[in-house]
Image (tube, rainbow, N blue to C red; front, side, top):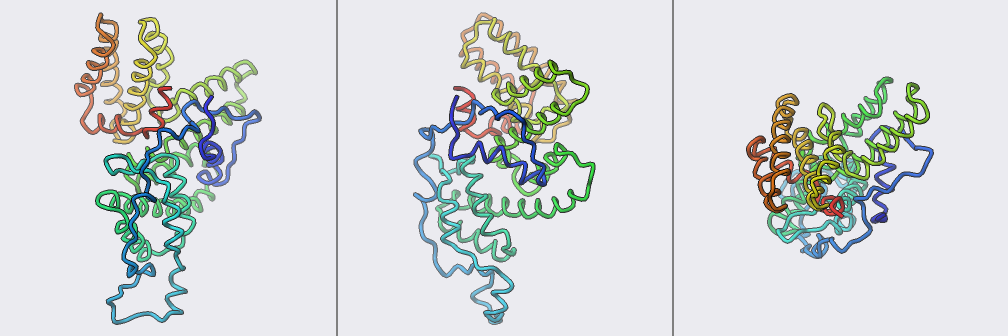
Length: 357
């Protein structure tokens, strides 16, 4: 089993304390290490924000005031209105975020940890100060990389501030279950961040939270006897390892059917690589339904037709490469361009690689 990368798995496990208002859900037994986390950094991009950073013009004003303004608040008023922000701390927090060969940020668990570190120094920053800091980041990185980094930083900070305010309201709702809190946090996140960006950043963390919540629900369910409880917990561990908990599958049986479909694919003699591809394709389509807000009934009808046609292709006497090509093309028949794009991009590359190992 792969090890933990930079303590991310531990951070993901304890994250319910942050996002679920302090409702810790610790199972009695040690948590399984999901198969799609890894300590192997060989796949990490060589370029990072640190390697691409160019020192911006130091005239950028992080106090949020225009230098051209004729009317300035006194030094004491400015200090009380805006906390002092360390540009070095901000640059250091973002330094390890990877940049791929196309100049896009690598949105993985390291990027999420970096944004969390940045937030610790910026959570009290006002809107003007945050705008200045975004301009500072944009000026420090060339082209679209800087634009993307500044946008993600600003969106994440705004989300965390909104989450803090929302959690205060949620605390007054006595009947609000941890699962409901998670759903509200995800919905709030998508109001402040691009849904695909948020999915790539939080996919692994959300999977762990779903796992911990479901574990506690199984453990406290009075309708289960000992054997039924152990079977349910075993299935949850299997779902965590397989990646099934990376998506919100409520309202569809597509993820649940993956168990029987995998057996069918094995009986067809399909390679593990092809089976992994098919499984990730299913998860991606379920994620796309969620991310694009597609009508659940309409999506399920289209998915059922797609699944039947996919089975026909997989059982045909074709090479595996040709089967994969035809199945990929079939997606365009039953799903919109927006859904296909979301299905292809919802999962960060490191999880795609680990799930295929």
